[in-house]
Image (tube, rainbow, N blue to C red; front, side):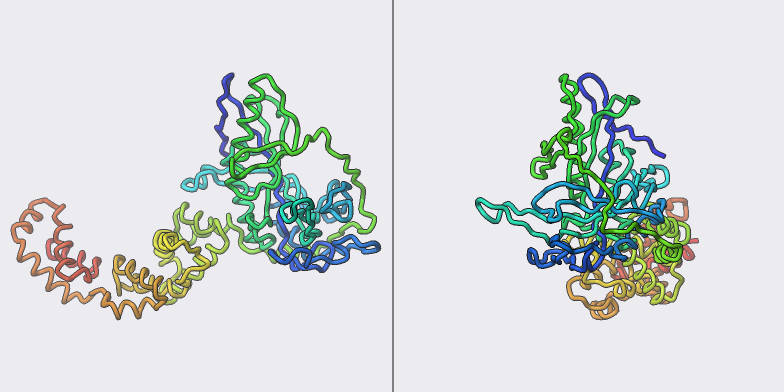
Length: 500
């Protein structure tokens, strides 16, 4: 485990930051937690609201099996305790976007108990910079609706489309000690959720958002008073929230003030937080078991089905890429950081091996380097994501096979990729049309080598006398004579043989 050395240097000495996160992740499901209403993002206001969601009298909630299943699978993915017996509670408070006057949640008996997530703090050293962040619990609850204050000069409108949407609240322990650790935790959690398929992780759409708990203390002292900044919706904003809030708290304490336990909001424009309400004035939520819902009791067959449905998870995939495919720790980390990238790479690898007539392990390094360096770079210039790439994995595999078989050189492959991105044409078609095929005929190359050596007899003598740096000169002259189309490997082999 790596210990954080992050400190805030105040006027009176160093301060340590203590961070805990509550992540609200919208469960991937076609319907809500207790009703059959749809959950599509961007629908017309109040177009996805059933009588249950609107809290019409006499309407009874019915748990959505798929939502429970996804929460259990998420718990298993973080090696958490799955509680076979759990219960729903009513959290009572009044707000205009909460039609029932209470939220159905879990407090005392959550579905998922303690687990953990391993984060990597340095991509170049994934084994030596890990830290384990504890998870206290995952409980399932329904979301509230949404108030819109900008639709009318004197009134607020209510959109209940989100009312009743299933959320997993994933509560960490206060184990993080820097903005970087918190950012790595949110990114890793998002990766796991997307691999499992239990949440799409689209933070910009509100399907994953964080409540950020921050306090400061002198190193080694007990925890200080914390504040909670609500609904932060990007990894960068989580880190900015912590940076600003920790520095604000240090300034307050060093000027003789006290930290008030309160709820705050983050302003992305200014990068600052502001007070929303004091926790000291918080409601007594009067939790009690929901009388309309029986406790959840999970049997072994259901749990076994959940476990068997889990995919290969990011850490296991990263280790496999390193051990079985021989990839560097950095490349393996980049390729497994997002589930779509990993899927794309595996398709590319399969297509390359098939087209080149080789085993996947034989072309894995080439495929990884090409994807990370060449394709990512080209797509970045175009402002396009991998999912929207004009070059599909099958087309990329054809191009890489041409390199692996020596049909084209690495430099020619860059030209081919540019044309593929512009036209969508196949690599083989472009190579033939543009005359980019590499010359591998040993007879033709040997003839050119003989000409180069004959024209530079003095340099041949110098080389044989010990000036080995001239070898690159001979390679360059041969490639120039062949207009860059000579196979570099064959050129090198023939030159070595001729020069002794």
